[in-house]
Length: 210
Image 1 (cartoon, rainbow, N blue to C red):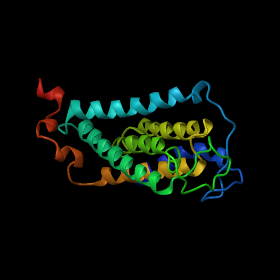
Image 2: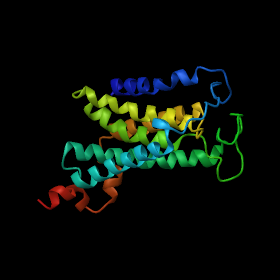
Image 3: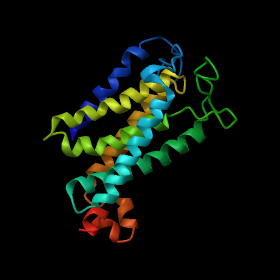
């Protein structure tokens, strides 16, 4: 478990070269990056990653139920995603931080308007939440699974490149998603969301029709 946490932190260190610049914000590192909405940083690619991650986790959970190791891990990832989304949304509406697309001052907090939801990054938090249970469960026996940490690291850089978020936004988002992912992975009880659903979901569609 500790090894998984360390590897996720190292994966997010991909962002470090982009944060080693004096600036503002809560950690003193926030500054605008040069705008780049092309190539791998294109906003459409970020959306493909986000929705692809959600679809993969959701469909895996529904298909497998909790009757298999992979299915239970998928449901724990569902828990992680949902609780992370609730927490990040609450934080966005609490802190109401202005995005770097709207200002070059990273110290603009508690602003009005529907666009000022920069802190933390919900997308980075969600992707971190999605991959953490798989890394925790499978990483020790299948080291290649640790490569999943690259996904939130990529999204963190991409969100800053298109000026959707500040450095502290993506770092806190990653920490939030990883922390909740570790919590859902450690729970000895059944996945929470699954326990609220009818019993048929425990079997999984694949096994139900066999």
